[in-house]
Amino acid sequence: MMTLYSADLSPFAARVRMQIYAKGITDIAMVMPPGFGTPKYREANPIGRIPVLDIDGDLMPESEVIAEYIEELYPEPSMLGATPRETAHIRTLARLSDIYLLNNLFMLASQVPAATRSQGAVDLLAGQVTRNVAALDRMIGQGGFACYGRLTMADCALVPALFLLGGTLPAVGVDNPVPAHANVAAYDAAIRRNEHAARVLDELQRGLKERLEMMRSGEFARRMAEAQGAAGA
Ligand SMILES: N[C@@H](CCC(=O)N[C@@H](CS)C(=O)NCC(=O)O)C(=O)O
Image (cartoon, rainbow, N blue to C red; front, side):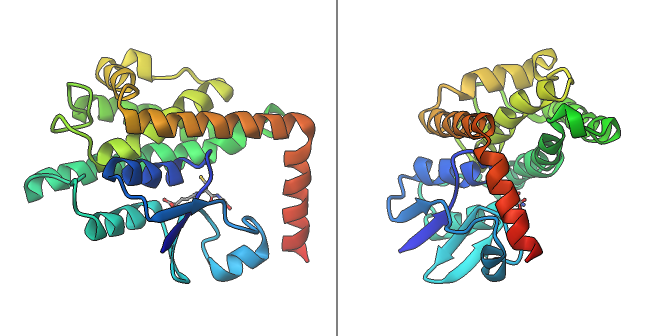
């Protein structure tokens, strides 16, 4: 049995979870990895992140790699294209989401606390996100899906990225560019009605609520200090 190391609030893990739900896969367990963030975790996982797919002890990192692997193991229903060219377009949208939106947003999230914020970092990262929402607006499909009128791996990548975008940009004092981009805005509103998108959006929201509670109670700072202490040791 395979296990996906995952957490509600991880948009990268949410991408893989949405694909697993859409395919109806029931034999991949999903757990928060024990010791996540500690040197022990990084000993076994050199990149040190989630998601990781644990295949009987063989650890596979990187959401896109895991998504492609799952697609090969469970080809039906296909989340890729009907032709090689369609598949290439789906991968282009997923890549746009990952590289140009999500990676920048993930780094931008570190700039949310105003006391330690670097305006230069915010301008650089938020500028990239805004520019690439404009690119997405010209590439995204009509009719409620990223492309080809059905759920694909592009949707699995875009749904968590747009969730993070909506929360992160306003939190660092930058306007959310989505409402000004009609095609992305229409997509964002429509895809939420898809059952698999709705499920991961609920999980992301639950993860966010938990994280905010941990920050309010001081538990988050305590855990960060603990992980940093362990890293120092
Ligand atoms: N490129 C990686 C990014 C994964 C990633 O950054 N995951 C975050 C959680 S959303 C993480 O594990 N962060 C821990 C860290 O940065 O140490 C992927 O696509 O899987």
